[in-house]
Length: 449
Length: 178
Image 1: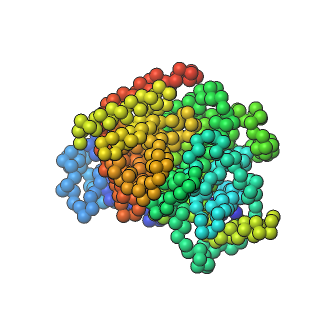
Image 2: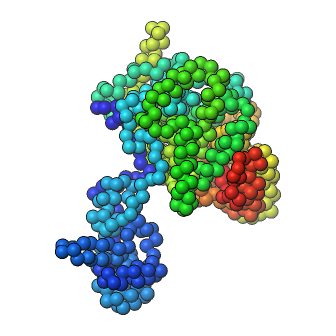
Image 3: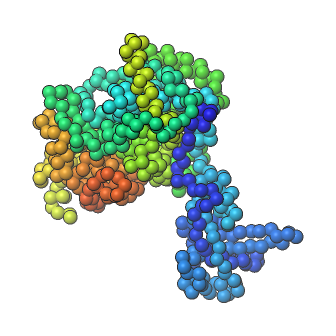
């Protein structure tokens, strides 16, 4: 199996079975083409389509011999009500004045989310389809190189989740700048070990690179066993904060310790905090950049609502360009050479990132352009925190059926009202990976490697 | 529900929001009340911290978690405390904060204006309602208390814009957000 097949895009909307998309029944009628304009204008007044705006009002069929047949949607037909009696009076008048002969037909209930869905929909009745206006790398697939890098970062998140042994598996987060393939911050859940020290010096520098080099321990080429055979792995992972956000009440307090419990310090929240602390450390002078990111903030607000977006189509395009340029995440394939050069320099920057002036121009607004890798699908709180911090892509390994907010219970990537949308991917690694990387870490410790 | 007390507490939340505005932050503020007494307050600090999760609610919650544990309370006792607390906040808690408040098991939330973009207490999601799937208990929630004042703060904030912002300035009458 190729690596890029292990990365599955989790779409904005619950995907429908392509050939069994939900439909609703409507009254339709064929009409005389001469009356089409009048009829459609009148219908839009007396029977607007409301939630069925994606359904085309008129279906134009070209019959054999070039003859044209037009049909229109009149109105919704409610279930079990195939009689015309309940059709509104205005519509009744219209039906009789144009001598229409209504019939029942099906139209698709929801707007198509893909070209394939749209093509299937049009077999019932034509609909309109608006592909999303923004694109995020990976939605249409990953190159081998990119998927290798995704798998390695995911592996480091899973290793981090198990770095305190299998009895204390927690969720873990790794925030990455994909353009430089550089780790920005890492965190484990800190629900039970909250250090209240507010000083920046308390935020440890990311130690993942030094302690747990990104390795190939987890061989993605190995066959998948998503149902683990090891029974002891069937543990409930009760310390994983996003899986059990209410578990904190069970915790005994640490007496005589500088650590407290903090029910909300889930890995994603802590990683966001660490990336913000890094930003303050690297760019202590906020003046110049503040202007820049306030401006960006405003722009991202302006693209927030679909209605606004329609009105300012031009501005949206500009906005995307600027954002891409700003965070240096523009088309990775095109800029491969440049990126290679860039990632070399940023490896050096990692050593001493305070000094490189090039970074100043690359300073992103919050986490714009950054990716996060999480062992488990985040809960609602964490998923929304990642919206606020403008994360570009989320990768998770294991689903969170009870509280997951990226497809399991909620689907924040598809909440249209939000002012930012990330793309979400699941990386298919077996649950055994948790066990494997634990044993390899402890073996390495034992043998002193 | 608009008891004289809740107006007093909401007025204090608005004072917090004004502090945020003075610091060029989006003006949202809150107070947490236990047994008729304000025990914590908070205001938005997202710009200062460059951490967009530092909403007023999160600030106030952190104060209490630290204080209670310094006083030797166990987590069971902390949970019991939260279940006796009311939060007064000038704007409907966002999805993140509503989810956090639900995890903490707060008793009730009283908010000012609704939050049409991010609201987690009815506007976008209804995280204050308990449901069979999620393990959360939910909390009581009342909106619209001194909403006009809260909206006025947002309007003032977005109209004044940022004097240092590059031209063109923020458009006037920008929609409120937290």
